[in-house]
Length: 570
Image 1: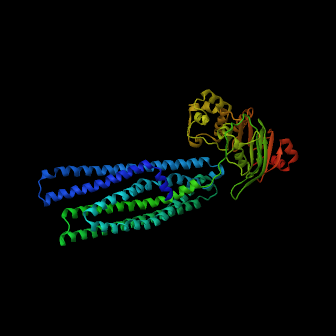
Image 2: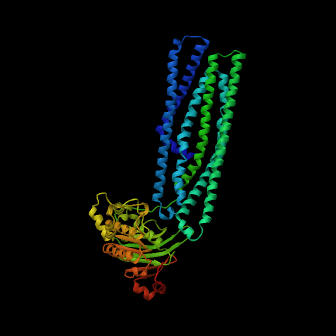
């Protein structure tokens, strides 16, 4: 609740407008009731002529039109406040996730993060759109109505003062249960979303190993759990609505009984005063009931707020950067690097030197740490121990934009977004990049033959994740990005995995072209592609077992000779 109030307090202009509107609404209700009572009294008891009440009818009509107008503006203020807060929170979540290093970003299910970003943030809407405006309204309007009733008939006002606290007391008790059940509902939704998305992503693998039926059962159980949690929340909502109606109806009945006795038996109150109180009493309790209903939905937002707070306050260690520009064609050195995933694989005592313009290769069995080492070299996360040096200086002295301006990272599955091939190649480059430069980059990457076959050439559209292109064609688009960018350091993570020999030869020629002006670091899958490297690092269980040229390692490393004979590196 503290976080929700903090976010609401930041919307000072909207909160002030809601407060002023609530004062106007209370005054309008009193004015509307006043003129209605006097019109009825004048016509039916005083037998006044119609001309006498025409001015009062005009005022009554004005108040009747003003009341829905105030309610509409008040609702729009709630919508505006909700939209502002949700936009701010989503921006904060995206900013945090963007700054997270890789080892933090990959923790947990992606479906759970999507649930927090979409469902949990949307779950706050009822608090800011309904509950907060209603809190202000219920804090102002009932006080105005109570003051009017106390001025008119003290005993009725005292009954209202005594019975009113039972409504907020009851919805506080109900709200505590609602919060717990809402948190359980969000947990079930997050589990269901994560399970469903993970199953979709691995569906082919599950079918291949005959485990799809088992996952179907898990999804069904997760779905039923979410259904049961939702029904429990609805059960509490229906029970709370019934009790609120019961308390308010009983309270109005007590006031009506007191007024009736005073008016008929004791003749101690006038018809105008009695009728005025009886009109205002339902309005008084209606405002409190609306707060009770809004309180229920507001408490339901607490579960979502806790999820968001936990995500925003989760500890991460973003990569540290400085302000210096990275020099052209820098030397890269990893010195005494130690890194470990939480409770899992570790890199130990890594030392690597890659001079400007050198071609280096990293080989080793699957799970030996090749990709992790490449991620550290790329600057995707910082090692807790050791240093990454650029021309002998710690990398954290240099600016992030300058570093990534000199680095291209081409993974096994480079990401392409929905758009044209030209837009995918141009990604990250200035908008005024010449078309002829893009065409030249595409040609160097071996895309000329493909583009010639496409009717729209570079203007051909591809789907999200490069849908419509083969794996080799995606790799060539990624290479074209590198040619256009002209970086000083290019990192390849097993670029030829799964490609046919023809495509592999095209890629190899492109890599050779890039090597003329950039340092190349390649995580190798096929050893024949890295035998001409200036230095080869052999990883085993997170440690560099051997380093040297191909001929050096053939002489000195039994493990390397065995891998060469087997023809595969990982």
